[in-house]
Image (cartoon, rainbow, N blue to C red; front, side):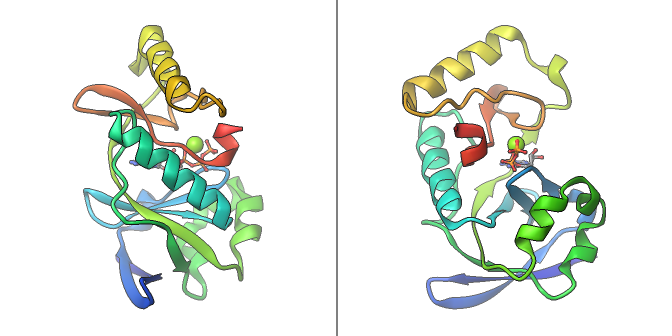
Length: 170
Ligand SMILES: Nc1ncnc2c1ncn2[C@@H]1O[C@H](COP(=O)(O)OP(=O)(O)OP(=O)(O)O)[C@@H](O)[C@H]1O
Ligand SMILES: [Mg+2]
């Protein structure tokens, strides 16, 4: 079943249809809504965090270390009334995030969907080290070293980072 989310992109309200709720993922600071098989909408409660994540991910993607960003910048996101029923499982797991989201303005951007790794045995220690080293070289001031199965995936076989939020970058 599809559900709608609304975005305000370049001053225009757009309806975005989100794929079935079992495909919605969430972390501590982000909701991730798949729009189709290639494109997802990454949503933050905090505008600055959304912008920081967008910028870092865009830069990392240019160096082959992250999924592409698929919008020019961040934009406002509105979840419809009663959206939390859409996030059933997520509610218990991430009560804090849900509280933060309710009645708030949200901000997000589109990103390429990649295949996430399933568990920590899906990548080698060397791959982990190489990714951390490459990210450190690009972002010497932030430590993007939070490599674990919910933060990394593969593009053409190469291990890349999906999580560029402030929580992971502090
Ligand atoms: N580009 C992507 N392709 C596929 N899935 C993604 C992508 N980006 C995010 N996800 C999914 O969304 C989840 C949350 O994303 P992310 O790790 O960026 O959020 P977070 O709130 O910063 O996480 P954390 O809890 O580690 O701080 C990921 O674990 C993953 O399942
Ligand atoms: Mg994460």
